[in-house]
Length: 280
Image (cartoon, rainbow, N blue to C red):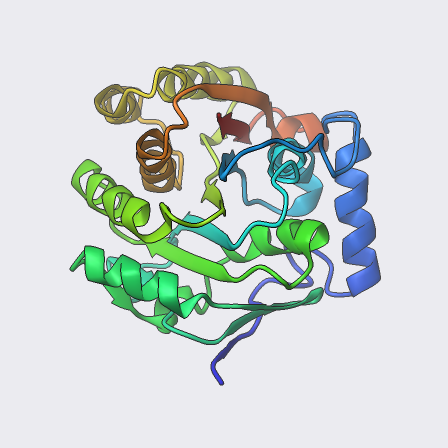
């Protein structure tokens, strides 16, 4: 069996299971967190869709907790989909796993082979390429939050984007819709926002970019990204999930929380921006 071992346990988050669980719980109670732990009030929905950051938990975890509190409102999902950027330039333009498990200190999550097959059948650009995921943290760091809510019972469809242009976002979002439209699913876009700029400038750029997401304006999103040189690393993941959410009937985005690494570290000279959003 193919096992994707954790690449950043002990770096982005603790490698000890109890320490990791405690840290995740603390993110909900953090001053920047939502102030309450899962589960959220249950909703009669077939899909929950969010954007969540992917930095070290001590920096972005409290913001991510806002997204995962909303995720926890979905009862008994059948599938978890995480769309994340490929930072390392390894492997295929768009990649997934055909089979196997993803391991974290909290356990193992099974790959949903059926959903992966449907995704690949719906888009020729999607390849079965585990090597693309081998070093990547942006998808991995979402899993402990999900496991803390659902354990290991819900299978995973991992999607890694080396290509993040608007055409790829359109193709992959349409394929995702076909792959998950009959499933009760969690849909996560993994992305940080502006990188290594003063906090005020990062907030200015991120506010403009998130404004396009709140309007669900795909062309405006990419135009703002280029015009302001917004260094959001998972912009293609945000665009893909935004478009898939629209197709699934989730057309009312909401910004749950914005903060930066400066809010947790105290260093506002060069920050990374973090946003938590949901589509309802």
